[in-house]
Image (tube, rainbow, N blue to C red):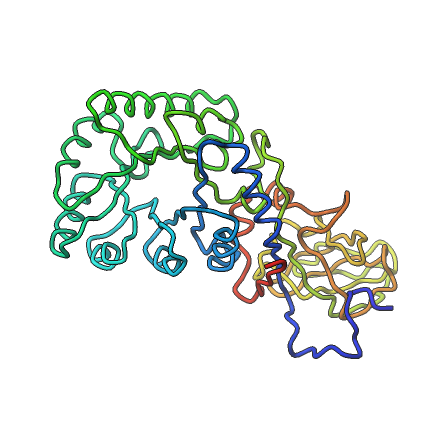
Length: 385
């Protein structure tokens, strides 16, 4: 019986990946459209840092561009330069170094204004190129990582705006705790940036782009999509994933399904031990399968003796400790399984579907790390392009 959904008599096994992630670009576009409707009239900047959280920057960006996205955010220059071919504004949300400025300014990347020294370097390079660089003021309202401290911002912004060759078109901040709905810390950040924007407006300083909301804030602090803010930033929510804490105001679907194949099926006797450390001993003779994916492919080691995969839509508990390349599972629920059958490690349909958030909780981390952990031998496969 063919449980894997393909015709074994025709398949060329050399062309099939051992581990792959199916990425549904139509669901991605649906998620974007739903977000646009939810935050309107604010607009949505798609954040595609870290190779779109490991799912593939350019395919994700092209799908979002076809859906109407107007702006991309990234963490660093290499990510920015890869997106320029799409002809949409790309801005760096993190930090820039002096030796990176010539190419970034030449290519029109929107730059972060994180302090006076950076702003002055951007101004000098823009004048050298006889052009005008665009920048957004990054305000540190409590993240403590990058940006102009809130208390210093009024005077410093007024000073930087006078620099030649620099168009200061935006202002933004970042929330470290917006996954906690109703959190006072986030509210103080929001209030502080709002006061700063209104104070500057009284002096005639108005920014075209004003943004504070990340994915967590869109869900937990809807006021971040209201005036004076007119943009929100979303990354992982576009993929249909959420932080394990906080609300899920957005009705989104996961775009990814991580899959592999069964490579071995054996019936082992009672008392057989499984895996490194012999952490599992068979309580009875039972069918045991080995799947061709391990922690090098992004499966959390915490799945050992705790998680499960799906074969033929049925749950197959992980038994023993995960290896780098392989994972052993019980086949008692599907004894007819044979090598070559498709295995769903993450995703699936129905009540047994395995969510990114469930892996994050099991591992004691957050969904960002789960998605970013897919190894480089995991083939990214795009559907509904």
